[in-house]
Amino acid sequence: MNDDSSIARLADTLRAHAATLRPGDRLPSSREVVHAHGVSPGTVSRAVAKLVAEGVVVTRPGAGAFVAIPAKPRETDPSWQTVALSDRVIDEAPLTSILQQPADGVIPLTGGYLNPVLRPTKELSAAAIRAVKRPDAWSMPPRTGIPELRTWFASETETTQNDVLIVSGGQAALTHAFRALAAPGDPLLVETPTYPGALATARTAGLRIVPVPMDEEGVRTDHLAEAFARTRAKVFYCQPTLQNPTGATQSPERRRQVLDIARAANAFVVEDDFARYLATTPPPAPLVALDTHGTVVHVLSLSKITAPSLRVAGLIARGPAAARLRAAQIVESFFVARPLQETALEFVSAPAWRRHRAEVASEIDERRHLLLEGLRRHLPEVRTGPAPKGGLHVWVRLPPALDESALVERAQRAGVLVSPGTIYHAAEPPGPWLRLTHTAASHRAELAEGVIRLARAYGEPGTGARGASSAGRPGRPGS
Image (cartoon, rainbow, N blue to C red; front, side):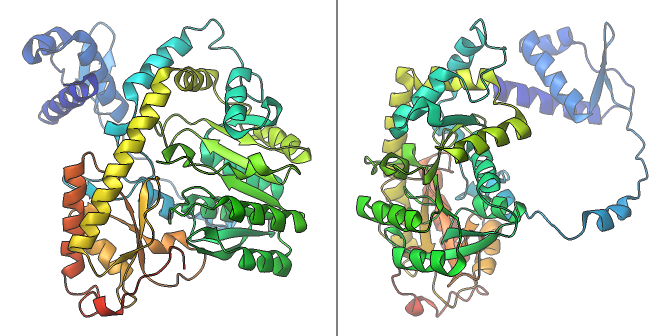
């Protein structure tokens, strides 16, 4: 049993014991707990600290831990805020649905990160220990990021250190980019379907979202040129490599076409390269490596391939746009914490980085194959596009008559979480879809069981699935 599980189990035991006592009663001493449960004093200390943070117990120096006395709730009347805040609502629901943790016994087939068993936890911990031992680990970093990390991001994107700004993860990078490059009310062109986090960020910035259709190679360039001409937009957001949710990857020729169209429109392309390190075959060069005009603002994050809390990304831009992005970083958050930057640098500079990428690529290959085979066997009525060469997800087209929302709800009751296709569209979706994540399950057997549970929910009456299978025809991702 690892330390975290030992702490969690002991905390559960102490919490249950506290529930049998009265407020103010004393819990067993640390020494008594050590002897009774065969754990270390450090484990006891951290378990008690967890209960203190939850408000279950309080500690008194030299006296021990006691059951907390419940605080009396304060009566408040915040109704006045309704008028002050007006109607500018921030809708976090799509992101919350992706980030939610499954209940016990529920299999996740949705999520934005690698399952904990696939993360390089030990290697990241070792990198963090090395990082905090550096003499200047707790000093203020350069405002644009520590030079060595900026150089590393530059080498990965065929740019220069001066082009790189270190920011707190990909989501923060999108926030900086959208606010810096566009003003409230401006149009923002996006692929459809696309990442819900980008849609939420754009709406929070007050931008008007204009969806542009896709095919198996990514954004349709004929529609992109038309959208630029019609809206006079100055920003296009896209994910050229292993697009979320479709898994589409733009060919080199398609990438050059996108750049030419954006240059002709005197517009920026925000390139979200979140999945570059999740590819199972070498992806094409990023748009920013092909760009000689400062058209591309590139986002390269590390959280997807490592762990959610390694909130480090390189935001790459040139010219006045770069100056504006640097200013936005200073105004909004000063800089990224130096220990986190140093940890990222330690990890990507070590042999563990290359080993981890190879292991993840192999696991993605196996899980993607297992998921697609499971769908073919248990859900032959649904359709998928060409198998993506990497990434975390498979984009699944459902029969047109099927009720997507009902299926998602029934799947959850059947013990499996899936992501509804609606949240990936900026406007009305062209039909029902699901995004299924093969790296969210803890192991392959769980992934296979998740598909079986989804098939069971699909067959239940009330989804519209019965009799709809013949209507489902193969379709291209994002069509």
